[in-house]
Length: 139
Image (cartoon, rainbow, N blue to C red; front, side, top):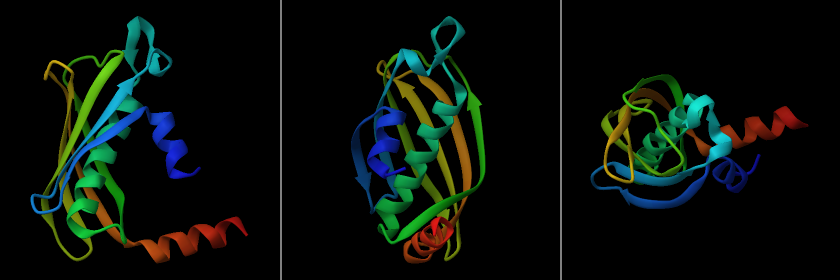
């Protein structure tokens, strides 16, 4: 699935900020009714995906697009229900080494209410190697 298709599926509206110096990123998504389960609550997988992407973008902002952050561990705490409308996923780097990084993130609604919080450990992979492996797997 191309990146543009993934962004569309996830409901990405825009990349608000990518701060390389601070190792932070903020992405805006439009939570859609078709992403909801009973009671109009966004399914947790979308919330987790939004946070995971924001944390990955924080790493890309800091380290460049030749690094592919590969999640090794992801923990999400759901603090309040996410509902249809704009949401903002923020990610930041706690510490990044040569091969791994520790990240945190927060999801807020349009009023600034925190809906979820995440932490992640990511492996820092070389984009060329990841793309070569993906190509080999499809041949």
